[in-house]
Image (cartoon, rainbow, N blue to C red):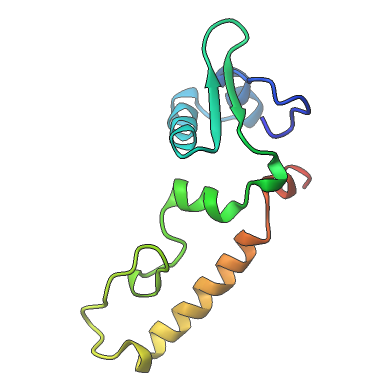
Length: 122
């Protein structure tokens, strides 16, 4: 879809074939992305899925959160899905907690600085 210059709808079968993935798995991904506002869909002849934003405006951090869940590897450092750590009485004094913040921030920086356009240009 992102490689299409005119942003016409692309059928699931076409995408599945070009990306070498099963249609069933792809349907699940596309439905999730449509419900999250990344994609639109059109039924009938000439139908399929299409991007609602330009590939340059789709940051990978948003896509990853939708498809994979929190960026943080542990809930006690998650920005959007925070949960207190039961094993740690003081998060600020916890060396693992502080390390995981660095990992989260580095990962988030990479995802925030990569767009869908960057991925398709590689």
